[in-house]
Amino acid sequence: MNKNKNKTLRQLFSSGELSRSVGAHDGLGAKLIGESGFEAVWASGLEISASYGVPDANILTMTQFLSKAYEMNQATTLPIIADCDTGFGNVNNAIYMMEQYESHGISGICIEDKKFPKVNSFIEGRQDLADINEFSGKIRAVTDAKKDKNIVLIARVEALIAGWGMEEALKRSYAYEEAGADAILIHSKKKEPSEIIDFVKIFRKKSKTPLVVVPTTYVNFSETEIKKLGINHVIYANQLVRSRVNSQRNVLGILNKHRKLSSIENKITPLKDILKICGLYELNNNENTYNSNKFSNTRVIIPAAGTPDVHVKKEISKEPTAFIELHNNKTLIDINLNTLKSLNLNNISIITGYKNNAFKKIECEKIFNKNFKKSNQTDSIMLGLDSKSEQNLVIFSDIFFERDIIDKLLKSKNDITFVISEINKENNNDNLTDRIIAKNKPFKDGRYLTNHKTNEIIEITKNIKKGVNFEFSGVFLLNKNGSNIFQKAYFKLKKKKKKCDFISLINHIIKNKLSKIYAIETYGGWVEIKNKKNLLVAKNHIERYFG
Image (cartoon, rainbow, N blue to C red; front, side):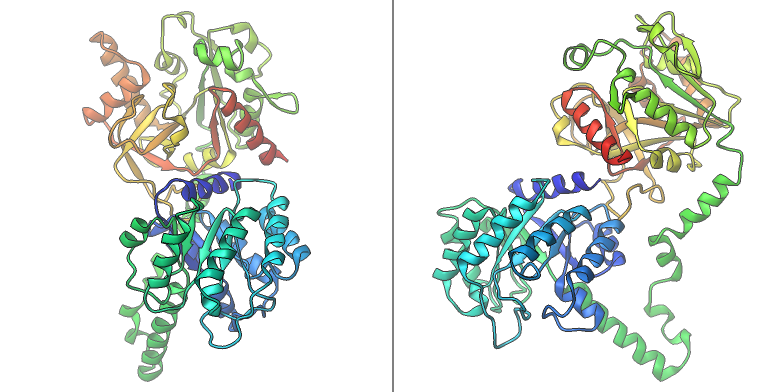
């Protein structure tokens, strides 16, 4: 999870496009930022300090700031960029800071070149800057302390804030870039962006290093202008906490004046919205699910009959992909079966074919697809499908999945439910990925799995085409009615001698409006093993998952 976020942030800064983060001070704010469509969360020093009711002047400890950044990280799928002031002290403090923030899953670190203790940049008076060589050394130390090189280190230049001028700002920026900073944040407190524009034009003559701005005071500087200038990231640093103050003052004033809740009810968010954002309804779903016998009456089908793709054989193994060793002598199928059984899913059938004898030691029902050389994945699924079971859960045999994915999927009340992830651009060149065109764009609402937000699948395809916005994870659920729909569609296509491979069958169901196909969006938590790179990702993922 965390490494995925780190990589996401790194890609945002290197894409050449303008990305945006918004300042927050708690988990709820982080959720709302994701829900609103921004790309990252800024764990704002000012907002966090204000939430404690203290000045933004290094009053709080590193532990207090880290606790808030971690809270936000746990609440959202977006990467977190942490405002770490001066690094909380000297070079040793900064090294410790990097170690702690990385271990808590924070994807970006921003440190500024002021002396410790600092004061907020918008306060008149003392703005003492650190020695340029001293701060460069701090950047080198923090860079060396990173274990994951995808973590983005932003060096914040305060020369313009301190009144030291353009030449000093440029000198410091080049020095920090050379010391290892991944991006330069150039800060200004003027009410118009003239000195930012001048700085960027001069800086860009020598450097392509990503640039970051914080337009708190020069509010008319639009994203269109920012992007055109060649700036890579914009931080809206403190607007959430400021919006909170006015709103709460207004509500409190009205309530104090009228002394009854009806006077403010239409001015505040409905209680049900807060309960929904924070996931209370999911708890009810859990109770309904686990208090029923649905799990014990769920059939699990793992189609593993097919011959591995030629590229998979060449890069990984000629054995069935299910038998790739991933962790402590455990194979993919071992790990997946253990996960399923931990959910009390014991009615499991593996459909075998290619190298059928390899599956003999696996302790579950095996169904041999004698026509595996000529048949497709759907044929194998049909061999295992049980129309009498309350649910049929289908899991492709080359997929590693985390327990949470199955846990959430089994709560679906829809006839047919897929698990999908936002499209991974690294898969653009392969022909193995099942791509999805979904009704709604990826919804980053602050959850690892967003099953309370339903999406609808419009088409499934192997092609890269307009509208593709998700990938199919290789995991889907059919309830009793969905199983009947799936079977009837299969037999109808067979009877008419039409293509009935998995993609054709699903698109037939959608096109003929036999059933809507819904989807749970997930951010990570699964890996399809189809090449050496995916195998390494899966091994690393499992290492973190199991410890």
